[in-house]
View 1 (cartoon, rainbow, N blue to C red):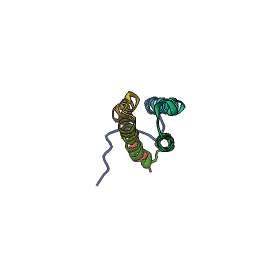
View 2 (tube, rainbow, N blue to C red):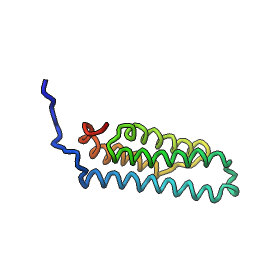
View 3 (cartoon, rainbow, N blue to C red):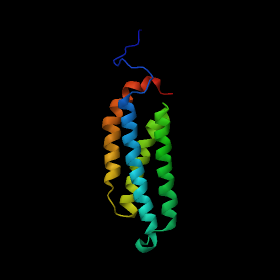
View 4 (cartoon, helix red, strand yellow):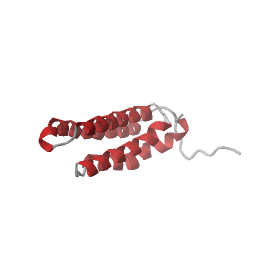
Length: 125
């Protein structure tokens, strides 16, 4: 049976793909900035030190998964939303903060990101 191609795509990264990647990375870095700000105030806010080991590890893994996504690796596609939701729930549960950066990042991933990623799915390894 012949493979149907609904998208006339090539493996070259276009401006849409790069813009989606840049937006996802921007909001991930903004979330990291919030975590750094909380770390600088952790004694005043009574946040345990172990929390920052976990949250900074999640931030690093989110950035690594975005880089993997950029280089067409499927593990990045699956890991990023899981880590993003984990990051959101950790802030919500442990610090009672609702992070709009995480919500916006999830919207960007499901909306703009998938419009740029789904057409290139056959190039992911």
